[in-house]
Length: 282
Image 1 (cartoon, rainbow, N blue to C red):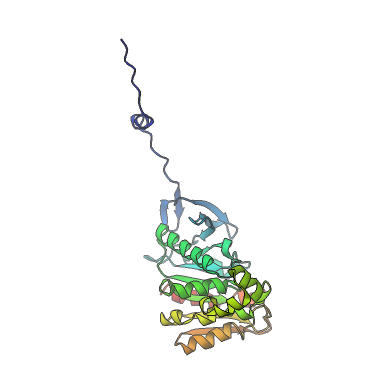
Image 2 (cartoon, rainbow, N blue to C red; image 1 turned 180 degrees about the vertical axis):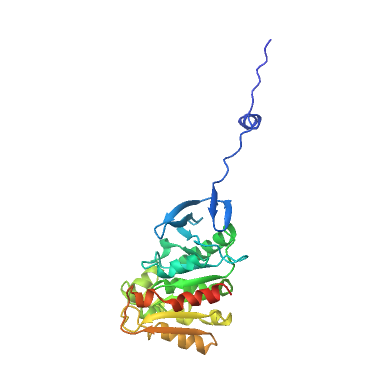
């Protein structure tokens, strides 16, 4: 009499020695490593450098551009950029060649730096420092409205920031003219304009510099003196005035005759590159 033997699916897999698929291997200047879950390898159209596309647990998209040359031994310097992909990549190319990685979360670029957006940057920081062993202190590169996001994040996470190098970044929400100024910003926060004004101390970069100064984080801004969208006097120069009053170190390079646009005089700043190299590799 024949006996029927029933095997569970798990037992069949064990008997056949079938294992879960191994994660793809990422080859980079960091060496070979498993590509983390929820990441996929792509190419950034900047000399075809490697770009890791990331889906964060919050569902937001982010990316990490890997260096083109190996960083100094024992170091993995990196930059978080905001608001989204930069147009003129001159500065990025030099940082990538110096061993810096560059990360961004484009999906939150237009959230005016509200708390939900800051939480996404924290998620990006946590994921990349763990999965790619990036330096525990990151350089920040806020451009224009990216100042609202990265300065607010820095105020909440000063111990995670090495330096800040900005390109005409917004420092004062109240004079920000992009997107219909305070009305659009208040709407993004789910507040009335009066409520937004009452909460400036929680959301306005120039009012949140004390934690950054307390960690003696160096700052530099590049800003045109003809900038109508983000006036230098009410933004970069006001940030500098308040930051220095708090004991912080900050320089502002004013570019004569230039406004809120991408031009070599601003976006080919060797001074900004040297700043990141000095403090990012410190």
